Length: 267
Ligand code: FAD
Image 1 (cartoon, rainbow, N blue to C red):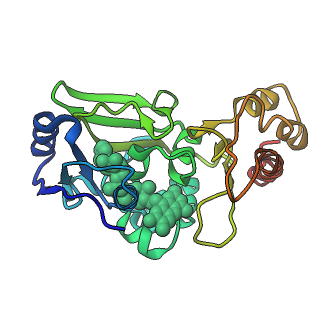
Image 2 (image 1 turned 45 degrees about the vertical axis):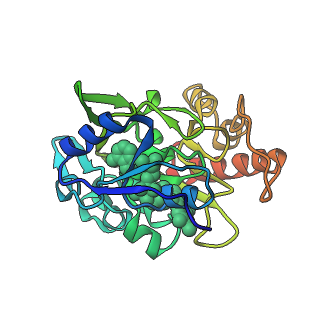
Image 3 (image 1 turned 120 degrees about the horizontal axis):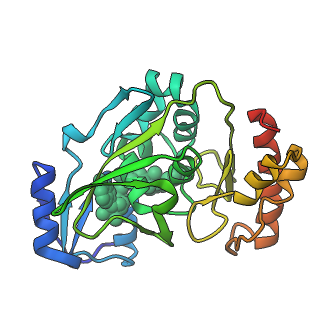
């Protein structure tokens, strides 16, 4: 499929990208790795008149220690997150889950910031960032904002990023030896998750990535892994598609949450 015609501008700085977003309003879209936006454009589900390419802004590609946190530039490719020694040591859940995103071709192009900004409930990285209680930094005409992951994912493919803002950084706390687990159920190794669990947040169980709050509450109350996992779908409305019915997804959520809690050693 061929996208609708569009103009293209390669931004040389964050400031230039913000200026163009302001000038062109709804007509403009940022382009990072293009691995979510371009498929939407090819399906004509998105038809921006202008693509502002931020993919070569090297200043937004980094992984560095920042006290008891790790700061990750929004343009950092999935592959660099996957193989980062710093992340493998301090935030192994993020490095491991990122290694399960699609295939090497996608991981070499897609960016952590693009995945977060896209906010797809079926994506791995947004749910992992929820589980890690990540903090996101955006920059716009009014300056810099920091947004907690819990306040960030607002609806299907909707986030707290304003139309004239650029997501610049993802900050996650060092794990400090706490348990973790990432469970992804898919048909083929490179597929999206039919259901996934990053202890304890859910993938593809609603219109946004979701913290499994009922599971957390049960754990605080002293529940075992099996008992807590029975709450995996409480209050959730999983999608019905070609891959799975809502009932099947509820069953998977129970199984994957139980496995995740057992593997993480938290119950
Ligand atoms: P883009 O496509 O460039 O952008 C996505 C959206 O975010 C656009 O609206 C864009 O305007 C906006 N945006 C991008 N960067 C910023 C920024 N810094 N600030 C503000 N807005 C921004 N993901 C998974 O998690 N798991 C999978 O199993 C998986 N499988 C895939 C399989 C295939 C075949 C493909 C093509 C993709 C798959 N993905 C999967 C998605 C992949 O991880 C994408 O790379 C990612 O979702 C988007 O990152 P991107 O850099 O390509 O963003």
